[in-house]
Amino acid sequence: MDLKSPISTVVPSLDGPVLLVLARAEEGLSGRQIHKLAESGSVGGVRLVLQRLAATGLVHVDDLGNSLLYRLNRKHLVAAIVEQLADLRSTLVSRLADEISGWRIPPVHAGVYGAIARGDGDLDSDVDLLLIRPDRHEFVDVLWEEQVGRLMQTVVDLTGNPAHVFELSQTELSGHLATEDPILNDWVQPSIQLTGVPLMEAGRVPVSAAK
Image 1 (cartoon, rainbow, N blue to C red):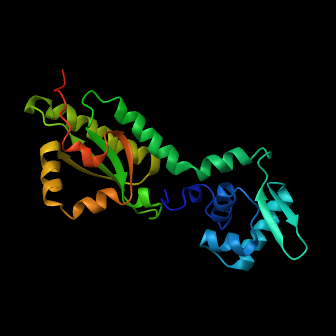
Image 2: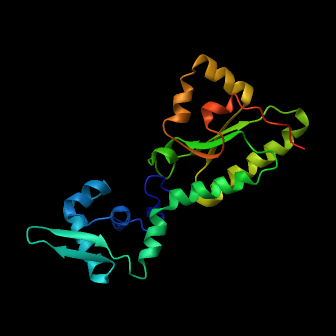
Image 3: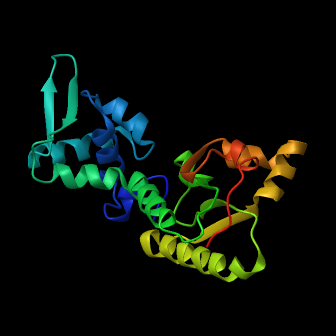
């Protein structure tokens, strides 16, 4: 899945970025504004896409005399599908959070960072996950590894992209926090918390052992 423009998974033409912009807009936009936000194609190409979409009724055109403003017709039968495709990144985050929330050994913190958090990347980008595991006895290590393995497969099943999981214990995180390790910037700016406590608190939160 193209992590910057997930809608392109099923709409690989210029129509995809144009529809993504329209789905996110609350007001009418000019062709030039849509081209700038879409970051794809040419102004002329974007206008041709808008004319074609307007002919289907999926896009409304408001003639203001000096300019034409385009907006998604949210009453159209296809509009709900467009909005769902435009929101695939949020859907992915929600699905991952749901899976992790059901773990027998819950992480102290789980989050996504990198391309998926920044909203950029491409078809070849990893889905970067950060997991802070509680300090446990060795007998639970196998269960933890099974959970992480299933999560990595879920990422592939949902997106087609590989998962890159960076995991460390609470004690190891405390060490990074104490030394203000620069790698913390990669995990925090930006990031999306999935479950647990905020990352900066995770190294200080005592968690009881799993049963």
